[in-house]
Length: 113
Image (cartoon, rainbow, N blue to C red; front, side, top):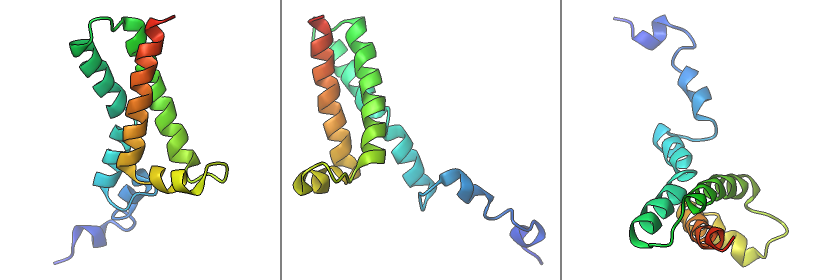
C-alpha cells in the first residue's frame, strides 16, 4: 500500500512554505499571535482596571504593539544596541514583555494628549 505523500509528489512539503522560517506549525502560530497579544492584554487589563483609560489609548496601544513587535522581530539582534540588551531581547517572551510595557506606557501617554 502506497502512502498518500508518495502518490502526490511534492504535496508533503507544500505546508513548509506557509510556515516560513519556523520549524513547526506551533512556533509559527506563537510568533504570529505574539504580534497582537501584548496590545490586547494591555487594552483589556487597563480598560477593566483603570478608570481613565480611553478609546484613543486603546487604539494607540494596539498599533504600538503590532509595530513594535514587528520592529523587534526584524531588527534584533542589532549592532546599534548594547550587547546585553540584544541578548535580553532575543528570547520570544522577553520581547513580548517589552512590547507589553511600552504599550502600557502608550496608553497612559494617549490620555495626556
